[in-house]
Image (cartoon, rainbow, N blue to C red):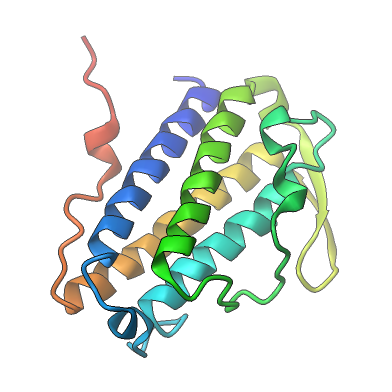
Length: 178
């Protein structure tokens, strides 16, 4: 499997698991969603917002790659936040709508990748303004790993609230060899 195909798989997995997480979260009241739970981003809604903020930050950085990915052409229109704990949407339906839009962009973006572009570098500044230049493919790997890391936290928070997200393993999305 090529690197590109791997990222296409991760984007599809990301989208489906996000759908499952939001379906599970929709069983809770707004008060339960915003309840302080001792998590790194306090609550379920806080953690969902953090993933969204992180995705927007990274997609905006990716949109500055010299390759000019058409899937990222509308990213600049999305709200800016450099506060990783920002609550961009305090109501689940609006947050879910933005999440679905981003997941669609991410899927289209990964379909534009090539193994050649994945070995290139991306120059960017972090949220503190410090400049970096790193391998583009490894940055995309970090992007997906970040989402998975925090969805694991969400799975635990939801389970503690009495909601089972279901199977979240990537394994069920990997096709059998024939």
